[in-house]
Length: 352
Image (tube, rainbow, N blue to C red; front, side, top):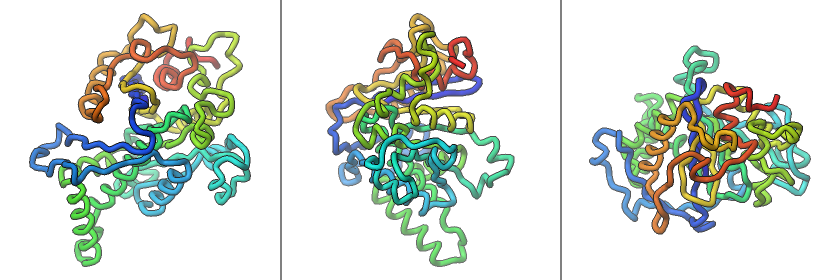
């Protein structure tokens, strides 16, 4: 899995890779409490009784989860897709993503976009909504890298459940609302999510806009294939492309969908997931910059180290490696991460 972070003007772009050593259908973790939360030591520790076992979600399971989240938490969640929002075609045939046939799509897979924000605190059209910091999460560019989509979907579920619980009671005079507040807090307590964690998670929702594409490469994820059709989405972005390939960019619906999302937002932080190793990596990851650090290398390094410390590790896996994509992974031409980080201010490396 790869994490990437971006600011405009650029501050940071980082990438994290989760290893393929994680069993394909189950993974469990007991993450430590956030170090910056006051009195976190007083929280109930996440012992084996409170450890949850996860499994890799299928495309259809993700579809049902995010649809349910948008229906259950309308005050925080909005679900759309690149076909509806931007008028893009869908990749694939009528045999792909059959659950999308019930949504009015005749063929192919929708590229879903789940947005999380506190609409009560930041109403649409308000000054605060216009200035909210924005975060982008991409579950997968490569469809056979399976952990990311489940990771971002589970993260969305937790954020929304906790934010909705903390918002209760909506009316302190309403006994039903008060009872719901007590019940949901008790349930979260029993799962090891105490008050300090709840306040922290709810703050993440109320102080930013989080835009999630669980399966950016929707067709590839459904087919369990790296590419979308025959094209690698993470070679499809117009950054550091050789001249003879300058007409071969933005051929995938995954790439075009991400491009439209970035045109609509000003992301301060982005995370894109890959697989095959445990690493948190950041710019640069392109051959032109093989022997260069990015202008924000120090900030990127510090944030990536913070990711590493917070994430911990699974049994039997090493700590996350931290460094540039060039140093830790390998360089690519047409990669999303470098395009998202440097495309707005490095036009000499961008194909028009």
